[in-house]
Length: 140
Image (cartoon, rainbow, N blue to C red; front, top):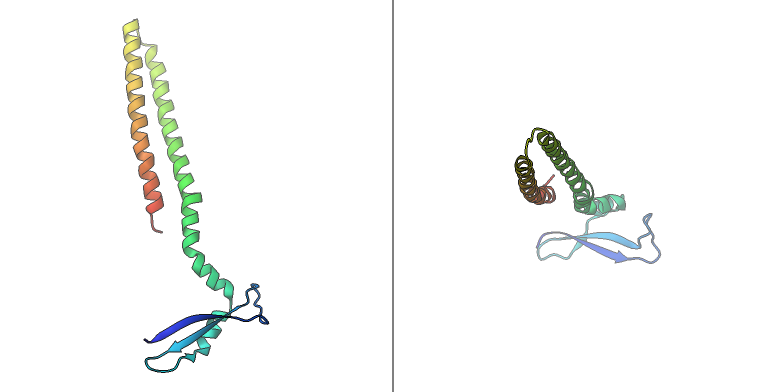
């Protein structure tokens, strides 16, 4: 097996800026040979332990951004769009009531409005579920 193996040694007397007492040591392993220390790899890893932490945390940062930034903004924008659509329909309903000349006309207008509202709310549930899936599954 050839390559580099990261190995962490606990050293009580040595303390890095981050407060850790673990010192990264990289051993170079070649086939059928005794492992030897790779000093360049040690220096590159020990220059700034914060860089390693940030590199490892990158997937978490992406997930956090999706769940606590993208998803709420997507939901709120869709909720505001839908509220505007329903308010527009409500205004058109009241405007249409003025033109009614009989009780059956009013009942017909109201039942048409209610059917449209129920259909819109059902479609909105599917749209929100789709928006949530696409936002969470999106790869940036």
